[in-house]
Amino acid sequence: MKSLLIITSAPAARVAGKPFLDKKFCEGMRFYAEAWGGPVSCVAYLREAAFPFGQEFEEGDLPFKLRLLNRGQRITAEDLVNVDLVLCSGDNHEYFYMSDICAGLQTKLVYVIEYILETRLQINFLDPKKNFFEKLYSAVWNVKTEFYRRRAFKRADGLQANGFPSFSAYQKLSKNTLRYLDNRTGSLLFATDQEMASRVDHLNTGKRIRVVHSGRLEPMKGSQDLIPIARALTRKNIDFELHIFGAGSLESDIREDIELYALQDRVFLRGAIDFETELVPFVRQNADVYLSCHRQSDPSCSYIENMACGVAIAGYSNRMWTALCEDSKSGWCAPLGDYEALASKVAQASVNRKDTISQCKKSLEYANKHAFEKVFSQRIDHLLGTLSAFHAEKLKHA
Image (cartoon, rainbow, N blue to C red):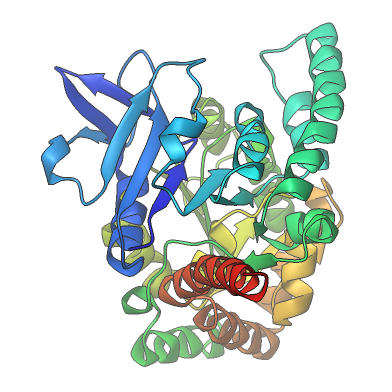
């Protein structure tokens, strides 16, 4: 039976002697265990303490074999004796050595990549905790590390690239590259015909445009632009409401600015809520436009997840949203960091209701092509195809 080892960057810890793991990660591992058709194991590296969005698990209850390593502890060739394929994070520089180990074994290696160098540099320079010299050092380190990342990808047997920017940046390094759009939205969470009809009715009757934003309220996520956009819409005499979901370092500033600029009847700070049972139903039933202030080019799940709710997206023209907007033929792009221009796109959505209705429908149609089940099946098929190609090559030269 073919065996799969997943080397993850997801956080892990031990609490009272039990594995403490990220809940979203464990849900994904459950799908791998069910779909793979053979033994599935996982290696994760320990943190010192518990972390948000995690929980304790009984090791025997997990549908996969778990191995927790201390920081700096490496996987060896002996650990891979009975492993057919390794799926490994390519964003984590600590795993590049796996390409050297697997190259001399019968074990196939596929890396998963999300961030491009540009995104890493953006995150670095937007980090408020670093001074100028720390940012400069980190930038040089990231550029240097990129050389080793590309070397590892060239030596691997395949690559899975999440999003358009990573696919564009790394596809030439491997003849076996899959592009996918990761998200948490299964087909059961998609907007219903009734909800879409209700949205069309809301827009056609000229009621206020309903805008939603969700995510970490941090400078690197562009959350500082939310109130300026709301104020710009007010100056444009747009009848709107903005619902902000999430938590972060900018939360108190946003709350104070809502009162300072008397936006209490238009802007609502709703905190962090459960994705599946609270956020998704709210967006499906109470929103028309998703507002993305994301400057980085990483493949945020928020794009597809909100499109699945049947809403159009107005966002900054980072590499990811620019490509996704063009491919889906839905939504609007504004110049990067120009909050006045982004507010104008929301105003456009409010004024041209017929076009907004069309964009909402296109969003849902596109998201349906990338539902979680479909994306996951594509990734499994890619891994199985990597193994099949290897075995076929072995028979050819036997």
